Amino acid sequence: MAGWYKATEIKEIPQGTMKGVEVAGAKVLLVHGPHGLRAFEDRCGHMSAPLSLGAFKSGVVKCALHSAVFDAETGAVRSQPQMRMGGVDKLPPELVEAMMKMGQIMAQIRCEVLRPYPVAEENGQVMVHI
Image 1 (cartoon, helix red, strand yellow):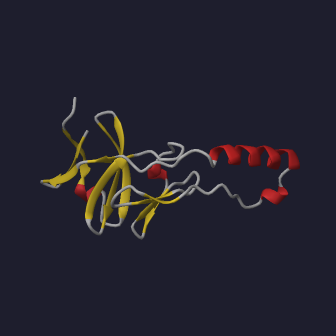
Image 2 (spheres, one colour):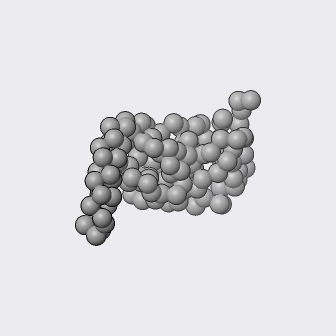
């Protein structure tokens, strides 16, 4: 049922940090930037990896899987996923060939903006509308 739900206490997400939480059965990424709290669906707009496993720095959220970068205020895509890996030259040629084919396929997957949720602070609690 749609409504406002407690996500966490504000003290659990200091400014400059992000945190993944479950709210009413939905996985939510809370981001506490310089302009306040933002809430997004906790899934990368590229391959649905949990963004809460990534990094938040300088106003952007970076996915841990393929390094897609999203604006932490709006959820807009700032940088497309990266399919490069270091150390590939040390792998067997057959594996490198298979990875290159897979990379060509994954590069065609459109990276979507992050789905936002309304978020508010109330009496020290972070509330999210699901």
